[in-house]
Image (cartoon, rainbow, N blue to C red; front, top):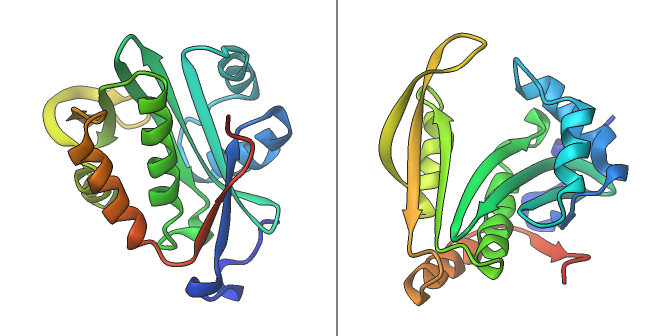
Length: 186
């Protein structure tokens, strides 16, 4: 049972972001089962977490409960966002925005200058969030999602390592209600 989103006033919300560890996987998999028709397995997450270089995964916790997570694969100066998910009970609380802020900054700190991702064509809410972060449509992957053969919109954000993009992130962060605490990052 996750913490109750309706029990927390938005201004009082304190979200703790931390690197994903094995101890978080029960909560991650609980959310994974709720939000994805073909969820990732425990084994896949274990493999990803074992790759210390080239991967960056974070979790969002409220009151000790995992309420969201995000991950990125890094190759050269490219960062590929592999997953962003939030417990449905915690949607519209800025959890995904916080996760993406952390992910983008972590990617830049690890040498990324451009980021990419795929998002379902029907997921207009996620696309709007990604556009706020500077992602722009760059193509379509036909039939990308195997559960229903839905197309994926490919989006890219370029020059994420420059001052203009850092300013964009500061503006996004300033609009987030509540507090965000970072724990365990180097």
